[in-house]
Length: 151
Image 1 (cartoon, rainbow, N blue to C red):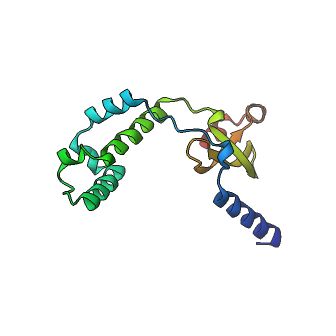
Image 2 (cartoon, one colour):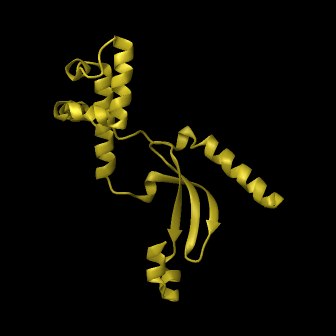
């Protein structure tokens, strides 16, 4: 690895650590109060086996002295409301189509035969990820549709 690659890696690391500037972020699409209440009503005790459910029920049990197996008491807690709120956000996120406007491209990471890879951040969460942009004209010209699909 030469010096330019090391400097590029340091720049990438600091770009990821810096994250997305607050002015570029958008508010998460939490549901309205009616949607959150409907989600609360639909939740069963099985939800405490999810990663978020386990975390919130253990946090509730530690702060209230309750038992992690007492779902009916957990349903009355603030943590249960938080769980319903984030599950409503999850539902809205999965239902919405993925669009370029949901992401902010920070910088190019590399180029390939069919396009380029970019460091991007999801605007509502600030999560870093790599996105690949493929050029349709290049793929068609090379007759490499099958190869592009494998990428």
